[in-house]
Length: 85
Image (cartoon, rainbow, N blue to C red; front, side, top):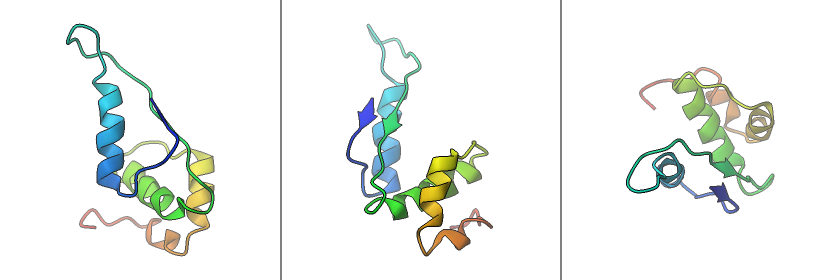
C-alpha cells in the first residue's frame, strides 16, 4: 500500500498501515508492505510521532525520517522517550 497523504493522527496511521499487514487472498493473511510519503513541511509533527513510536517498539528509524523529525521543534522530547507518553 502507498500512502500519498499521511493521516493526521498516529492512530489513523497505524490503522491504515495495519490493513496492509492483513491483506490476503481467500481470507489468508499474508505479509504486506506499506510506503508513506511525508511532506517536508506539513508532516514534521507526524515524523516526530513516528520516530517516537519506532524507538519505543525497538524498530530501526530510517535516517530520512529522523532528519525530517529533527526539523520539528518537539524533536528533543523524542530522544529520551517516556513509555507513559
